[in-house]
Image 1 (tube, rainbow, N blue to C red):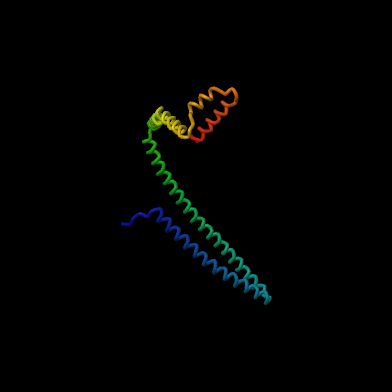
Image 2: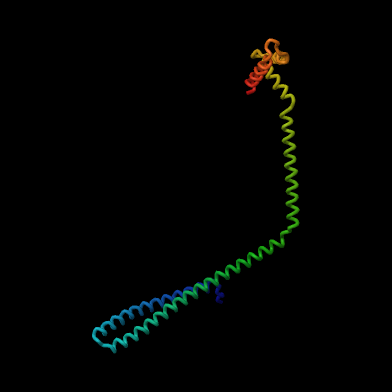
Length: 205
């Protein structure tokens, strides 16, 4: 039992047949061109001999041959056009089949997709994401409070006082002197403040 040929198989057979036909036409056209040159030479020979009657007969043959050659060009062009049209139709058919399959897939997806459910899912995601951001912010604030306890500031003050003592600066005394400006030197308090600030910048810088 013979299997039914597919469209692709039929297209290949048709393409081979068209190309075979075109090759045959090309061979015949080459023969006509050789015959055309032969007639042209015979016409020139008869003209040199002054044989007008022979020239007229040969000229009629040459005109008929050239018409036949022109028809062969037209036939070859039509065959090529048929092949192109067939290939175009096959391509369009493939595209239509692909679009049909895609349409079926899109239809199935649209049936399964619930826009309202998708919207609820997105809203829930945004809500949970906001909660997560709030939790992260609260955790960061708590960590900042733990890392910046008052005990740390007292420890820093103790270290600064210890360093000042080691280099011979009495922080309390200088601050007290800064609070009571000298009567002999009204700008002494300012000098003392500058000195203290310079020393503190040197320590903490």
